[in-house]
Image 1 (cartoon, rainbow, N blue to C red):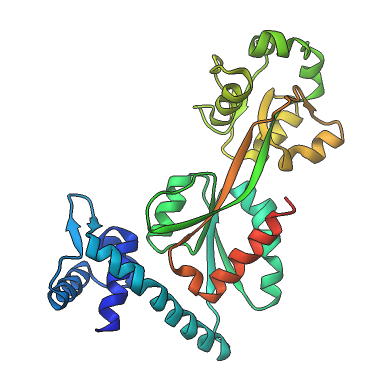
Image 2 (cartoon, rainbow, N blue to C red; image 1 turned 60 degrees about the horizontal axis):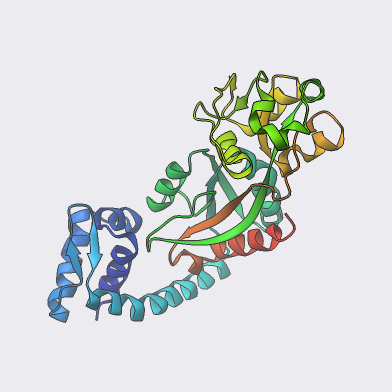
Length: 298
């Protein structure tokens, strides 16, 4: 059986789409369609159900993918070892929210640069955008708070991020923080809200987890970067919900104050995502392993 046909088949099986698989393989969509039809003729069985949006594997297709994919990945791994032995290295393309990439991911990967690894980053706060880019082959590795679905991706939980309700000392002094336990967010009425988006994603998540309610306020300041939100809060612009890793230094210095310390703080889980099979690529596997090990200390 032609290995090129099997490689195309596994790519389609993982991508769930002839078009997406064609992009990842560097082929035209008609070429991918033709190869799959050729393989189906050779096997005498259909491998995919054609849908309005993409394809889904038949039972025969799932069985073939289960048998073939590990061997194709192993062959790719051998090719990568030989490639690196010649001194040819690939550039690692990664994407994720700017704050987390800048303060967590890039420092953790910096030692790889000293070992000859080149890095390119895409600072993209939108999780859907980064996953779409990963699916299209624009990125090798993505860090996102959204666990993706489907067979195209492999996701590992990276770390949990504690969310903290904070303000400058001025606003904290005007707040009866003890009343937060009894009155809930009503005790915060009148304090401006600083957020990353008009929809109040961080405040809404915190309100739901801690107060079992939805916020009735609107954002006073919107800044689509958590570092900017922190600086606004530090300067007295209002309250915000921030990840502890980002604001702990400011808390320790007394520049901002935690308005509430709930017994069970809200957490957000970060996921490390790659395309299925891409851990056979040495540069992706190295970065993936390093981030998982580094995250144990986060």
